[in-house]
Length: 426
Image 1 (cartoon, rainbow, N blue to C red):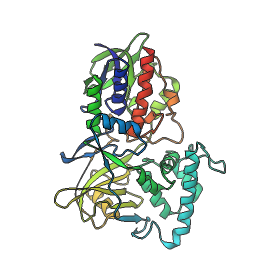
Image 2 (image 1 turned 30 degrees about the vertical axis):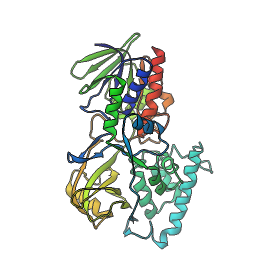
Image 3 (image 1 turned 90 degrees about the vertical axis):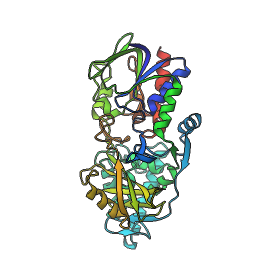
């Protein structure tokens, strides 16, 4: 079947590109390997029941204007994040309610945080080195810890916030992931909480569905693309089971880690192919837990293993509370096993009774192969400059975004230039 433009991927990047193409007078067909829309945004109920929760990305910030505008256009409410009511810190040895660390470790902790604040500010100002000229981006988080001489108590807190920023192996991922996130507000890791101001209702999946409908694009799910061929006058995509579509051009709007599963022939440049083969290292685990014994608004961080970041944003039925937790898929625990989840919960919130948990394994998901962007310190050029139009192909994903990379806003910011470039080319 021949169409105007093919969009591979029914996430926010693909949906926003379809909207922009429609405004330019172009029709599009959107295909996705999954049987749902939303990409790494995934809204569903806990255990299949109400209320709807975000099992992929959750938050937007006050400066994510594209997301805010999209929500207004499509009747999606922005729900303010529940304020923090109770605060717990685990310093790697014990759980605390008074401060992140004890008095004996306070001076070392303050020294580390002061350096993080300074380095986050440098990065925000556009410098990729600290004041002494040492690198900040081509340095792994583990090497950054060694440079700063971070004690275990400070490391416990930095790694907790790492699970929602760097979200992968600190031995491979750039320290810039944490520092950039610290720079959102005041330079401190704790300041990240002030940036996570809103979630969406009825959710990201509903937003994407409404965007695609409004664009007029035809949608075909269950279409796992295996081959993409960009020729002089057309693009042909073929599925693993031999189905085929053709178009005048295509926008590839899938996660970077999925690109290695698609055969582009010689359609990618050498740096693009190298980056696609390397991918990124996002290995976060996000769980929703239904618990009792915890107040709404409770935040607990630290512990150095299992779940290292827990927040209780919602109440549920029967006096239960819904807690969202983050950790790393690092082999030290198994989120599929109740005993591991219960132990991880008890480590940070020993007063909590685990009633159940639910999650989506993004690392095992063949249509994601990882969580949100976690940039390797070396070995993968994921800069948007490396991903311009190649032949009749353009690329759009939050992993390659010119703004807000790794966020929903980044997905939309990547869809705009891809749609503009393809429209101009046609």
